[in-house]
Image (cartoon, rainbow, N blue to C red; front, side, top):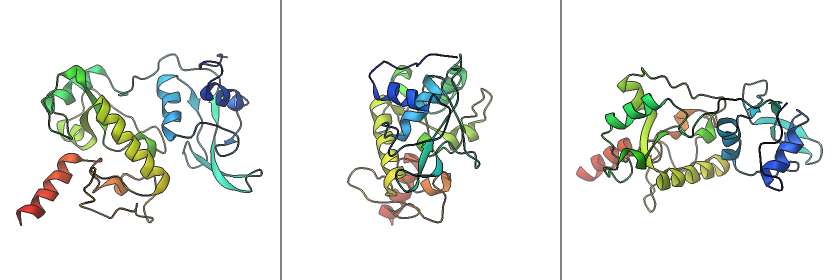
Length: 223
């Protein structure tokens, strides 16, 4: 059994203590961590083994007697922390280098050429919407697969993207390039016919694929 991996007195420390009974707990009235990103950090950087519900999703929907409604619940599968945790990019260094070389170290939002150590390989499909651990990255991934899955962002832009994606996940309002409300597929509201963990709901958004979004907008302007 591992001890609490978080600093005593922090929100994460308190939530880990609550979840240490290995039962499902309501995120509205029992847990204090409000951002979905928090639980990804637990899994990927702290090695916490989060459990999934019957549908294979980390954010189980269950009835809370205290809230008197169905809410998102979280559960720890085991108190044993994984010894080998992932880096933030969640991929082998060989693959990260291949992606940076493929894009010639170009940052996707402002098309800046940056040094490799200023760039982060980011998933187009935001981790906040992963229902299960979809991070299956292998060093021999083809260029087609890499372009479909990844873009390069600076640290500050990556954090900005995360905020837009987290807001979209919570509110159902898709992100946009600041000041330009244009989606080349779909509208501002997340398509309610598409599951919140389905990548198809992100298509058309600037933050999902800045290159495709830019090409589509230029096509309209050129007409």
